[in-house]
Length: 111
Length: 113
Image (cartoon, rainbow over all chains, first blue to last red):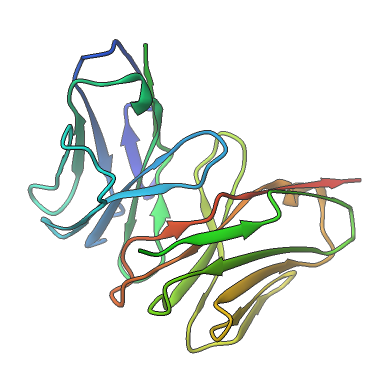
């Protein structure tokens, strides 16, 4: 499968714990994006990388959230001190041009 | 920043009818407008997109129109089929480099046979 992959697909955690998600983009896609989607809503932009550089970050992104793309390939999204409001589907997408290809998402449930 | 409004939130049609979903955007600098289809439990998938230098684009039963002056764009699906049932999202890209997509809240389309 040469599409965008994400791991894990599901994560259940207790409030206050840290979680980390991984995204593997389509190979040779230089752009990588993280979005969050809650039930009944469209994906909400979180952050964007071009190669290893984080070029854009949503003003809505709490300082508990951090993302990295150290070698310009896979990316990780970490959430520290999780809150119940962080429960959502976390989607990763990658692109070469304008068209963004989405991964299957990681569903986070914070108890 | 950019804001995208999408209407209607739900749409029910009979098989074979046409469906139209409308979106408006606020940032006149937006230049890329994709439409995504998301089936239950699946990832969003691009079905058609349009750039600001084009007024209309068609791909088989799907078409998108863009009115830059009015800042609105629409998705048209003709001869709907039950497999068209899904949530449809419009989006706009407010950055010249085509970066962050700002999505509408989605339209749940139900096609009954």
